[in-house]
Length: 98
Length: 216
Image 1 (cartoon, rainbow over the protein chains, first blue to last red):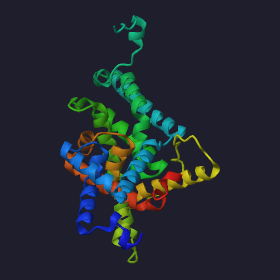
Image 2: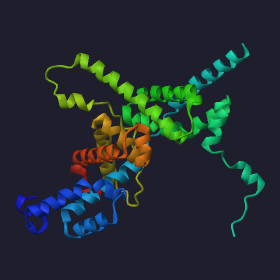
Image 3: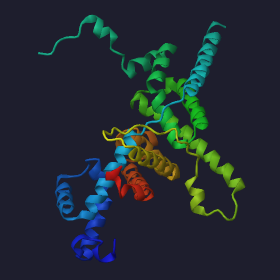
Image 4: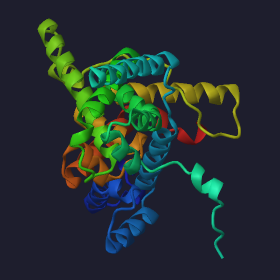
């Protein structure tokens, strides 16, 4: 993206500072953790800024990826855990009867 | 009108964590075993994501549950059981990372930059690949998804540990900011700050893929 059209409509530095302000509270916006006034402000900004809208969508997609990426616990890992725990339980029982 | 559950159905409802914890505190190992069954996969996921390899995650998983067993009587119930358990697991992992860092510091060469040292590079295998629900699964699309997931795993592994723990608990495990703050003993604003910086880091690392995310 060339420098001249980096910000839609090629406005000015004021536009850039608005975008910077948005980026700073993007996490709260995604997590629905903003005040009513902030929400109005951001929604208005998003409706006029393609670059920030794109950034917002990318963050949402990234979050979706994280939420849907599960690690399968290998069976051997689970077996080892239960083996260790069984030993620990038995040790306590042994002490109790001793 | 809401129907009452039949007696046999009421019986089959699993007991809440708080009841199991109380039983386990009184010495009922079966109750503790049930808690382990409930949280084993979650704790493994946390350990694997923070440590980045199966062997270390397996050891950390065992350490975490053994510690929970040992110190269960000290658990006062001020927070939920899983918050307390995740705190133990996260601390076990962070201790391991610190040990790893001090071990690698002994072999660090002059050519290695401070940045690479801070990032604590870790091995990432491809066994993290899960399934994204997707109706249209062309072979090319599947390849792109796999590449993206591997890139995400790599990017998470490269996150500084402070950010990684927050991202793992918040974005991967779905805890609230308040819960993460309790697990990591941080203020909520500190959690938010780390979360934001962690997400920015991931987005920058994955920008190549995210630019075309609609095709993925």
